[in-house]
Image (cartoon, rainbow, N blue to C red; front, top):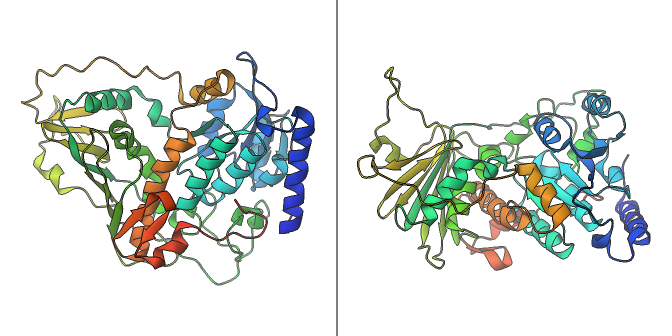
Length: 437
């Protein structure tokens, strides 16, 4: 179904009116939750990454499922036979019985789906990165606050015990003030290339709905279901895919918000696709006890030079440990290296008798359960859109700096690149009619 702007606005107004008649004039007051209630969930995107999200939330009531691929949608309906199926998430969001939605689509449709859901009074769980553009991340954080919605971004490792222990160690001052952070990722999404020849669209795929807010183009094979991450119009490459996971740890530990400058380098920029080797450098201003910070990102084949000076441990069989991806905090009194499941204080000799500080962060009840608990009992989850929005903004600014090929200062309050006008169109994109945020 193709919606004009007028018909979309009419549809949205009708849905809001329906909720207002149900629960008074304030959509946020609709359907008060009891801690023992099960939530009525809508699932937007049902395959690949979405499968893990569905597994995490299936203890609630899944009443609606949506996917632009009919094969995937049929599978979800078979798994949840009582759920109604939709191809267009805008139709799903017309329902007046939904408490919350889980969004696991491609990056370019995160913001349109999440914004509409929150405006209609629903709580939102959305995969990382939170959005496709910097402005969208700020917009979703504002909508969550305005509509008093409980939100959570899909940085599942945030709930892991290892991240919590690292945060406690850094915040206890065990390695002293941190002035530099290095984050590297061995994964790669790169070199997407669009084609001009016309190819037939698979019968199971609604290509028009899949494109969503992006300007129309003929069907592109090899993009759906996963390789969209390689294309600027739909994803953000390796940084977009993995930045929120690994950069989450220093953001949390150092209480970061917004950088004041950013620069990046890599192979020559291609208008279609993301690079296979990206290096980004942000600077963050001093904030309270946290001094000014230099923050580095490396992906593809790039790795921080400082790793070469760190001797890798060997196991009993002589096999050296591998740190294919990780985070290195460089403090005045030592260093800490971590990944999802382990950490190591350096130099080894200095910390051989180290005793970890007392726990100050409670173990998680589970990433999805944190979100459910906050919906039913009040409060917010840890990866709410205020926190994860600022994290996503920073991640996405790295791609902006690479694409413009210039270092620029960043006015976070006004979302403005200073003295770099060619970056502005990449901060806030345009939308196809009917898909505005």
